[in-house]
Image (cartoon, rainbow, N blue to C red):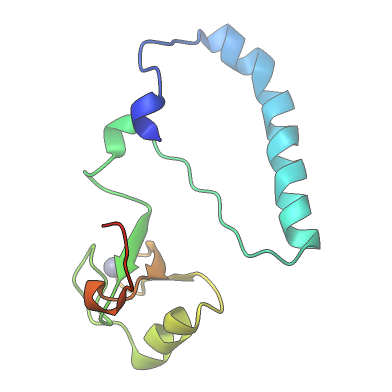
Length: 110
Ligand SMILES: [Zn+2]
């Protein structure tokens, strides 16, 4: 999906400030729909430059935060495995999500 992003597009500060309120309202509407449908969601925005260098989100597959490599408390890891909620790493404060180890995927694409 990111390969389809036109990186040459630019926005002046004036244009940004002009369209920002409407975009914030659209985002609010989307969050409200998710909330009303009890659809768990999280919106994270990162600049293209941050991709791969550091992230607000981190994955765990084995109870270790793959960003800071700290062992997560077992209760936290179990909560993430159940998918009950998004949680923060107690060490680096990144938002954590669980992904099953590759050998547990059935016919995955990656
Ligand atoms: Zn961490």
